Image (cartoon, rainbow, N blue to C red; front, side, top):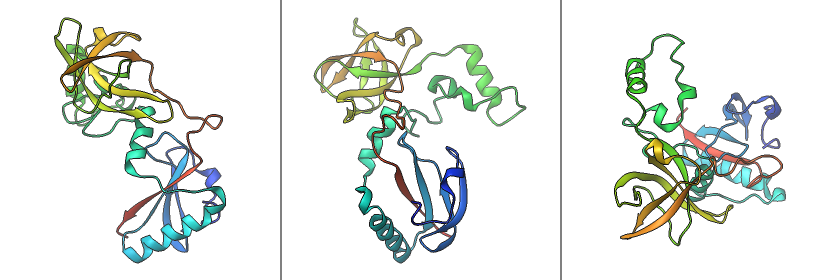
Amino acid sequence: MRKLTDVDLSEIKNYWFKHGTVCGIANTLVARTGYTGEDGFEIYVPSDVETSERVWNEVMEAGKEFGIVPCGLGARNTLRLESKMALYGHEISETINVWEAGLDRYAKLDKGDFIGRAALIKAKEEGIRRVLVGLEIIERGIGRDDYKIFDDSGKEIGYITSGSPAPFLKKNIALAYVPPGFSAIDTVVNVEIRGQKVKAKVVPDPFLQASPKRPRSKHQIRFRDCNI
C-alpha cells in the first residue's frame, strides 16, 4: 500500500481514515477499516470501470513481491465470523437491540437524548430475553444461518445467525441467539441440521483474536467503489 500512496499510513489509527493520493487519484479516502478482524486498509475509488480496473491492476502489481492474492466475499465472511463481527440481517437488525447483541458499548445512555433511547431503556428494564453467543459444533455437522437450536427436552430455544467451517481454526463454528440461561461457557445445546439434532457447546468469543504475532493473513487492501 505504501508504494501506491502519499498518505502516511502509520498515522491512521484503527477505524480512522485520511485523504490523499492513491494510484494517482487525488483526494482518495484511505481508511484503516474492514470486516475481517485483521489489520488492513480500504480505499474508496470512483466506480467507473476504467478507474476501478486500473487501480485493481496497480494494486495487484505492487503486491506481487508480497504474494498478494484476491480474496472473495465468502472467505471474508469466515474471517468476520471468527472475529465475532456482527453483520446486519444476521447478528443485528431492526428487531435486535444492542443489549442482546452485546453492542451496548455503542449506546451510551448517559450522553443525552437520541432516537431510540427510550426504547433501549425500556428493553433493559424489562430484562434481556436472549443473548448472542459463540458455538462450536462438537458432533458431525455444520450449523448454518437460521438453523434452530433446542434444549435437551426438545424445546426450541434459539437460532443460529451465522455459521460456517472456520478454515483457520479447523472447527465448525456459529453465532447464535439463546436465552441467558443457556449462555454460560461449555453449555451444551442441540442444533437441528437436516432434521437431525447435533450437539454444540457455548465457547468464548471472539473465536479468534488476530494479532501481529498470530495473523490469519498479511495486511489487506480492500476496495470500495463510490461515485465521486
